[in-house]
Length: 269
Image (tube, rainbow, N blue to C red; front, side, top):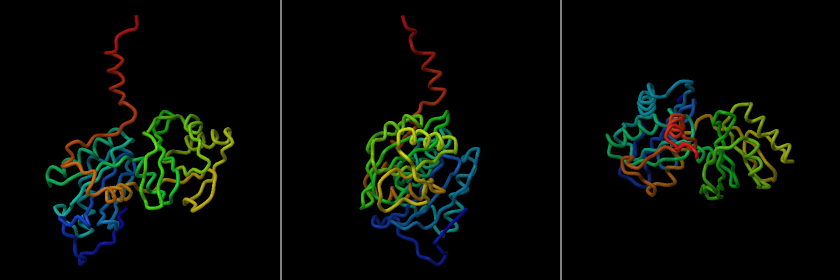
C-alpha cells in the first residue's frame, strides 16, 4: 500500500535546508514493514507491506518505488531514519544494514529510533504510555513513556522483556494508555492479568483526550511514519554521521548468543 501527498509538479526541498529536512524512514522490525518520506514535519508518502518472510529482497525496491511516486531523487534525502528494534532479529538487521548502506553511499546522517518509541509516539495524546509488542515465547517487549502536550516523548525506563502478567504487576499508574502490537493470545493474557489485578481495560480505536483508568489501543498499520516524525523532532541533534555508531536494540539475546554463552560459561563447582 502506498499513500502519497506528493505530485510530479510539486517542488522538492533543498536537502541542505536544515529547517525542512527531507527524511527517509525505514521500519523492518516486524512482518508489517514500511518506508516513509517526510519533509520537515509533513508526511509526504508512506509505503507499507505485510511480508511473513524477510524484507531483505524487496526493501530497495520499496524505497525506489516510494521515491519515484513522490517525485524525489534519493540524492536529495537529507536525513535517514531507521527503527532499530526490538523486534524480528533478521528484520532489524536488514533495516539497519540497508540504511547504513544508503548513508555511506550518500554521505548522509542517520537517526536510529526504537520501535517501542515509535509505537508510543503514534498514540498522539499526552500522558503515560506503555508500548509493547510480541516477543514470541509468550513474552512481550515493553517500555514506559510519557508524551508531553508539546509532543516530546520521554522514556521512563529501558525496554524490557516480560510476560504479560509480570508487566501488569509492574505497572502502577492509575491512568495509562497501552498500545500493544501483539496477537490475540498475548492480548487476552494481558487482559486477564489486568482483571485479576482489578485493572479493567477499555479497548478503544483512539486514545481518549481525558479520563482515568487503563485504555488499550491497537497499533498503527505501519511504523515508518512515526519513525520519521521522531527523527524530525530530533534533527539536527542526535545525528549519527553515515550510521557509524548505529546499533540494533535487541533486548533479548539471539538464540545463537545464548547457545554460545552456555558453551563458554564455566561449569559451577
